[in-house]
Image 1 (cartoon, rainbow, N blue to C red):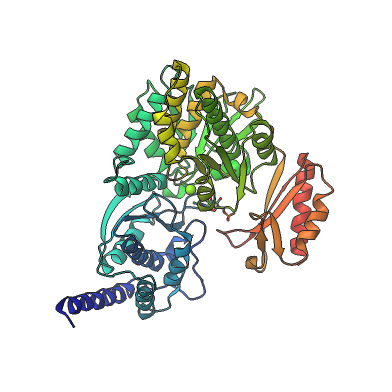
Image 2: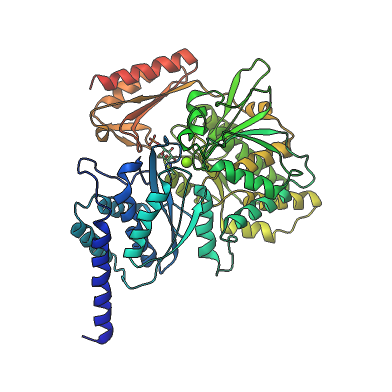
Length: 548
Ligand code: 16G
Ligand code: MG
């Protein structure tokens, strides 16, 4: 055996023994829970997460080693979940969600029943994927404002140290800020660096792009933003500071991050979307624009009240339609040809939005399964891919070839040039890595300013079909298997035929059932021509489940 080989073996043995040793400090709490890396990583009550986060640190190190030392992100957050929860997820080098094929390793690590079994799994994954355990690896991590964050960060650090990783702590930030930073780090040495890998760099990039795209346009009217008492509050305040009051003024409500038990309580994007009403702390002023962020600021929904104080929600579907409409108009004015704009939605998209996109705007629409990773990948197949979940999670992706085509386009008139410039600035306003509430806020304000629209004009594009979402607790949610982007059930057998029978009886009726990826329940969605019918259809489909 050569000396090098011997040294390498020593190093690996040392690493494995460190992993076992630290693992004994971060023991798995109980064996009843089966941890699963789901749509949003691991997410559960924070007091169950210590061992999971430690183990995610190990996996992050392997992932970085597998990708030649590119930086991997680790975000500790539970988004819109209650204050006592927390979660952890990995970010791939280009700021994307962890590649799906690695979710099984994450799950395996989290469920290893002993320190030895964990070290063995770690070694096995390295062997299977031909990962050199002495190769360098780099991790960037951050967390939201939850009280449980600091303790989980120290579990993560133990995992990273045990695996011999190099790591940087980015402190408290929004999920999209960390996605942005990861992409910046990994593109720093390339011909198209994404930006400066810091929060300051993030604000600078957004602010410069917003100012460029708003040049010559009136400053947006006052907007009230509910920050869910989460990390988005202080970060939005920092962004506003960089933008300056001459560019944008906003009132931030629910921005108390010190009182950690207030997070997502009676406020935030999820509350407003599901309750269809104003959050606590927001005073209804007729026809003014409002927005709500979720707990880690990767989701946003807008809303307003009319003169009669009636509430109108402008959700992810409305944002997608607004963005697609604006981008199409700019492309048309610019004279740039052969750029395909497409929209990606999930089965939860309101039927009216899909009809508007396809029949009025004439843009192709793809439907994917729930979860950002599915939408993101489908959006990458378009030249400009707009993707939004109805709950307000989404962004717009411009392909590299499209950016190049825009940059090198020779405009025949100032009008054409101005449209091209607007498109290019828009691509910088929009976070290209993942849905980002702060960046989506600027996107919406940009379009409204260019159109001279208020919230009610925006809302007029189409009228939502009344809909109802019901959560049903069942014995075994894994018995519910779907096809056709979750729109149809394959199992339990016969159930889909019964749903079809019910749906047929309702004008514009549509209903589907899928297992939740984040809770132990299934969800029933129904929409129909009237409120009463939508409610009735949802109820009847829910009753079918109870009869199982
Ligand atoms: C996660 C997803 C979100 C999705 C939701 C569905 C990410 C980052 N988050 O929060 O996009 O809408 O799950 O929850 O992908 P459900 O499976 O419980 O209905
Ligand atoms: Mg979130």
